[in-house]
Length: 164
Image 1 (cartoon, one colour):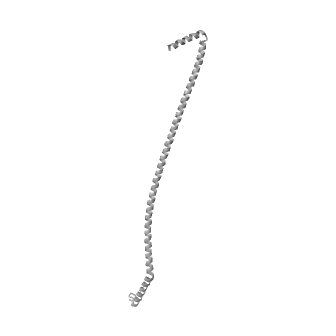
Image 2 (cartoon, helix red, strand yellow):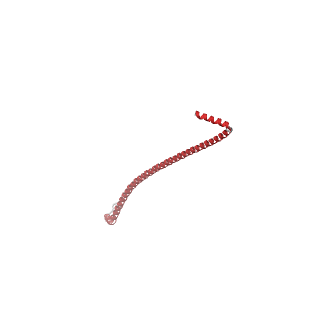
Image 3 (cartoon, one colour):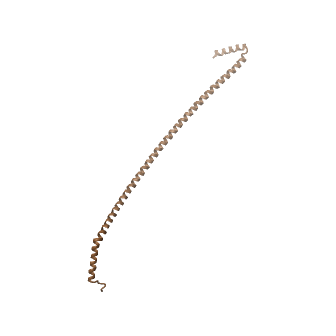
């Protein structure tokens, strides 16, 4: 039974060695270990707080980025709408100017055609009158070559003048 039940002296020295070990560990090891554990706990807590702050800041940045993106899209849409309006206005102005220019050209062409037509008609009338006079001259020269025929023609013209 000597192995199972320790002797009183052995118990005394083991207790004394254990107490000495506890004292030395408490004096030299536990305080630094506990302070290091406390520091580590504090640093972990601070790191968690910093991570939470960073997470909140990331949420704020994400929200801010989304707002900026939405504002940029709205601004882009406004600029595009303004550009479309300006383009449509310029196209309408160009169409109006082109239509006015075409109308002016057509009117000028019609006027020119009318003038040319009038000039051609006047020239045609002049040519017809000239031809008629020439023809009448030849007819009268042939008919009025005899003085009796001339006198008869004059009397005939006088009769016609009186009737009109």
